[in-house]
Length: 269
Image (tube, rainbow, N blue to C red; front, side, top):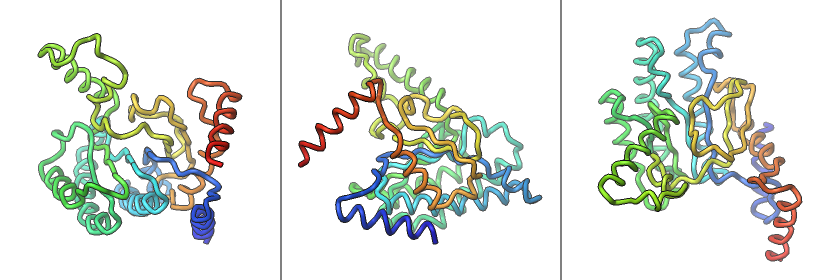
């Protein structure tokens, strides 16, 4: 199995201190293509969502095993409320079903569940199940934190942050002179999450679809042609390998980055 060979090679190199690639601290994924995957097989769209749920379990587990510390999955967007009501209802029930199936595995693997978005729009039975699993997986030292972006929109997150910030200014808890990028970050849904190092989108479309608009300013973006039900652990490792082939400059020149990298290696020696 190609995936198993990749895993063994990575684990061996990491244990020997010669890892051929660095695992991103935070990976964000736009899980796109469930419906199209099903339609190509003349199956109902919901079947694509069922298959996609299997990939969630696989990718969450693999990320934790590889050493990813934060994983954010774009599970249901604010725009998804515009889909047919019957499909939305099925998605909500499928989400609860999958939470009931994954809860013990999350605990076993030391994965803490969190959520972000306009959660008040979710049905009560969904919020109840989310709260149950979040309480069950709550630990001060998780191996990885999994965030489900539910009823989430990047513009809405920024708007909500601006409203809270304005309220604090009005209440004189904050002055405009104190406002910086880091101050604003404190008003986002998950201010303690680092920005994603890698943003993966499945399904072949090259857009961010209102996902983590503030946070992905300098994320490496990788578009995969596989539909989400086809995105396996092997695809994940390939994506991380491609991530490591990119040079992250953050506005600097390539020469500056290489010089700083060489200086860091000398210090380590």
